[in-house]
Image (cartoon, rainbow over all chains, first blue to last red; front, side):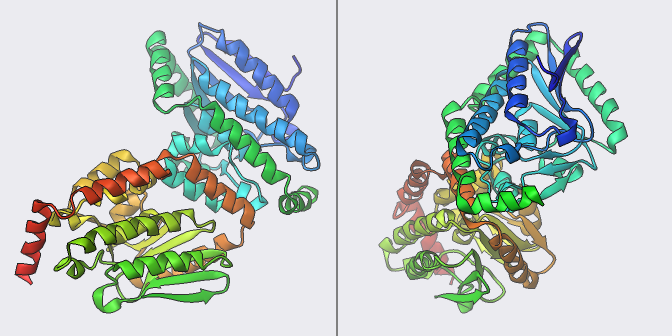
Length: 249
Length: 244
């Protein structure tokens, strides 16, 4: 296993950390492959009640690493399919997942936060879905945001683009618990995960499984169709021109 | 009936029957559908109403001596809701003053809704024996099934402020006069986003929401039509005419 992620365990609480801090933990094919392997190993960890997903450095996850795929439509599709599959396998994990949004959570990064059962951050983090501003269609993350905050609010968030503070994300329901500042996030995370781990392990897992069934979480055809739609838009001339200008600037 | 004013790349469509508080007729609703279709070159649509009130609902005087009129109104309303939701550009409503019954149904089809804190919003048509079910799928899509149940079944109206709390209103203003200008500013902002990505994202959000599909729309329409012309609805409507 490369060093793009780390997985640590402390009793019933596991922590999965994205480790590409030099690019704000942007999701590349390699990082996604690492995450797939980690999530697969966690699926068999019957003793883990809580998984914390977080990022090393100042960002949680800056989203898809589009630089590598802007000129290669096939690579873009592979990247987006990989993200779609990761969201599905992360959601299907038996344990409760907590997104510890330590800093920027942008686009696909904010999508990962929505896939987790519970998301926490601090008031000053930057979150959101600027995809439409870049000419990109956030079709992979859209179903997860809809499940998290409802279709009406998700529509406004995704069609508005832009970014918001952690406090605003909390007000919208994208984030469930809010620390007043970055320094307070550890205490919030510890108290939450400790609380989650004190409940009945089997009852917790059974409840999560039911919730996944209630909202038809594992809707693979929709996620795959979303990856294809999103990749098709990325491959369009309009979007390529915007992305090239932004990524070089 | 529906006036059109281009403001830059924004098409401002106004229900234009201020003397009747923009009460909806079948012809107005058909005109609205045609206007939305005719906005192909616009980059955003604002749906507003002339005067102090966005829309007081159906013009029920049409139904006084014509049993078929109400069914036509409900059917045309469903088409208008559909046209607004399927428009590939952002649609922003200015719900100043009031958005009652059919007017509230139009809001549910818009991507963003600006209203004043005192605006009156809801479905009091239930008191007349008219089911707002035609609007139920799109309302539930916007605010969730739980809150939609309350708003659909309670014939009272809520304030713009309460509607903002529920998520039906996205931008809350202090006065009705501020609503349309704010809607136009918001529309202009949204109109500058890359058009194809916007259209595909809106289309995708419609597609992944079962409450936006044909079956839900048809279910809602059928439920509203089922009560039309029945004894209860005739009796309750007749009471309105006897009071006026």
